[in-house]
Length: 333
Image 1: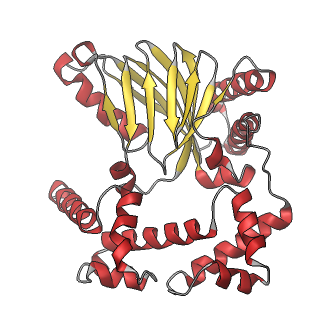
Image 2: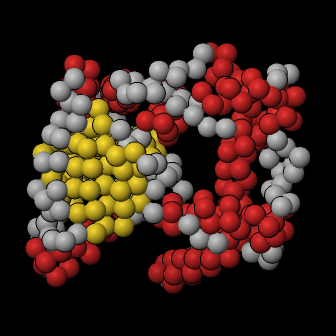
């Protein structure tokens, strides 16, 4: 039997760590298991925590439990990370809160909620909590539910018919990971992602589903944006003209996806600029020259846009990256 590439042996616990070092160990464990973030607790003196993590080829699942804590994903954490994923937490014991984009999900036992690594979020967890966390690549969930970003920070009740079915099915599938062969594992991953998407469709606002034609238009628009992102004249009028549709129609399609053309262009440009600031190839370039390379000629508002997106100025961002790269180099030596 062909065995799938799956890592089921990741077990992180504070049990065998000296009491004074437990919380520092836990913060590192949480960042290594999920995404870069900050962890705060009022129970640091007697802190306990445990993560049992399974990494599959596309998704990861983990059982996490421990003392009271606030888990916070900040703009500066996002700025220093490259991963783009959704995380879905199923509350197994006690209660929790998920806050993102001005929305708050209150999770009782059996409820679940989604949050995105690309936007700041807070997770508030009670002492003695236990959750199952499913980590899914953004693209995988967006393929099934294009307006997923509108559904973060909203609770799906485990007492509802669909919510309870999704929760119980995901739990059973997660338990069967270890013995799956390669083909079964891929189907299992698809089933878990499909189930998560199914649960989210019960939320208010999830019915803004795009048609096949609208999906095609968005894909074509994304292609135009990627190809012409360095053109300072690129705007929704230029994209609409390239697709032979009206600006109004283009805006309607993107609105149904939960975003706008301007937002997509801005995000693509800022991501490109951030990549150049991280690259040794452009270390000799001025920040203004890099911004202009990506089609941003209005430098007056550039720094504010960058700070809004990454939580630091472009100059601070470059300094942080350079410091981290020097530190990594010293460690490898």
